[in-house]
Amino acid sequence: MLLADPGSALRDAVSVVALVGLLVVAFRHPRGRTEALAGIVAAAAVLLIGAVGVDAAADQVERMLPVVLFLAAVLVVAEACAAEGVFDAVGDAVRRAGRGDAHRVLLVTFLAASVITAALSLDATVVLLTPVVAAAVAGSAAQRPVVHSCVRLANSASLLLPVSNLTNLLALPDVALSFGGWLLVMAPVWVVVIAVEYAGVRLFFARDLRAAVPAPDRTLVHLPAFPVVVVVAMLAGFAVGSTYGVEPFWVAGAAALVLGARSVRAGHFTAARALHATHLTFGVFVLCLGVVVAALDGSFLRDVVGDALPGGDGLAALLVLALVATVLANLVNNLPATLLLVPLVAPLGTTAVLATLVGLNVGSGLAWPGSLANLLWRRALVRRGVPVSSATFHAHAALVTPVALVAGVVTLWAVS
Image 1 (cartoon, rainbow, N blue to C red):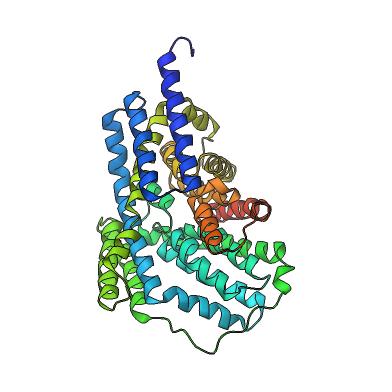
Image 2: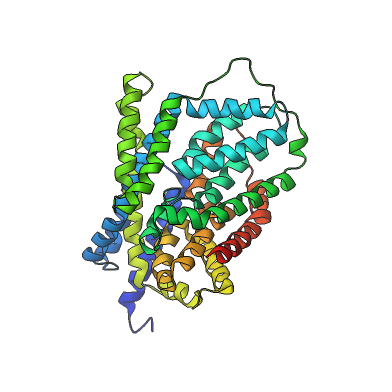
């Protein structure tokens, strides 16, 4: 068959090489301009070879653009919250609530990471929360379970809301639920998965959690009210806006404008920092990645994935969907996996799509390539001199991920 259609084989090969190249770029995370240029070159390659048509590429960009705009806006919100001192206050609260006990520190970290991931997306947890909680327990063996909790929850706690993860937003058009409906269905799944994650950390890092943690300083860092109010209003805006067809990026953009302007006026923030926080070059990279994945839509990879999918929506089928999503996410990263899988799963119904997202989100914590959050977390810690062990990361993931995955899917099946 390959000899009969060498052009098709060439197009498939170029598309796969382009995808692998972009995954390598994402893993290395070079400067923004280099990242964007790599994306543009890869997208141009699949267009020039004819692996994807201009119309199909434009459709993919149109589909993904609201998601990229949302990401840019919510990153500004998160960065402005950091400039206002929200994350410093959380780090101080973690230390104070622990009162020298590592188990209490872990519990408060879990609560903070779960809420921040759900409200401000996983990027805020790995980039902004992780460094402050690492500093809060610096010098103690308890630092390992605390920072590993952040990366686990950046993936697993992103199930709660459509806006908690880009994978959710990409799948949202194929989910027949409002913002509030999503919350009602996924809240039990979220709670069960977080409980499994908590038990897993307690078990895997039991020895580290026996260590003492530094006593809190006398100076109390207060939680600033204004950014918290803006974030709560933003979440309410998502819920209200969804009933009127308002895209989340409009709500997030308004929150970014209000909070950013206030922070600039107060001297906590600058316009340049706000622009940098949007990570526009990464947005370009994501759009180009979407074009490359669109090129794979007619390739052998789509056929292989499609053949692996079940035909129903019973418990066994939902577990298979989550397993396929987990494998694909850890092979090609969960963003391309979402773009490949969701259109194939959508005909099976909303519950099937949500089960797939359990695999794409919870399952992506199994290995470094599974999620960009994993890579950003590692980069944030290494930059601050905090040691990161690949062996520890993967051993912890191997223990917890399968249990969390099954527990999440069973809970979803039970409440659907």
